[in-house]
Image 1 (tube, rainbow, N blue to C red):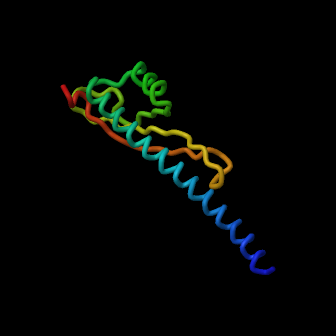
Image 2 (spheres, one colour):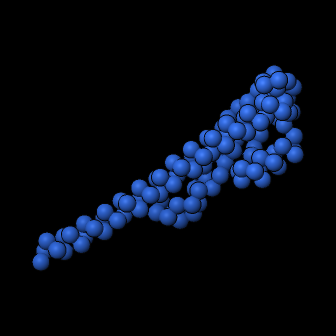
Image 3 (tube, rainbow, N blue to C red):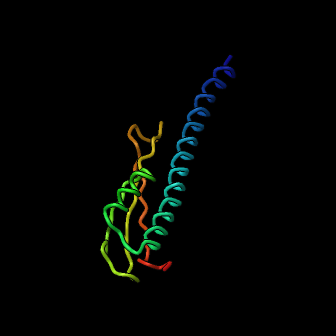
Amino acid sequence: MSSKLGLILSLIFVALFFAFGVDLLAVQNGYTNLMYTANDIAYTIAKNGKLDEALILGFKKQFKVDFECVSNCAGAKGELVVFIISKDVEVALISNRPITLSIKRSAIFGYYD
């Protein structure tokens, strides 16, 4: 009888570990998607050679991320712009609120001209 009780209790821990693993996979998937999005945004900035409000609104609408320009937002061709993008990820077990993932990247204005 005690072995059946031990099996039942151990299955609870296995279920919790499985749920925690699923949450970690969700966070890793969100971070990977954010990295690819940051690369796309950096390429677009480098190709356009400018960063204006229309481009920022396009990023927010197309990629569904929060865009924040950190430095040199209205730079000239050949200058470096630094930006941060962030996105919320829903998890079940790690936190009862969405986790905000952020990535800081840079691009050079007009690099692909």
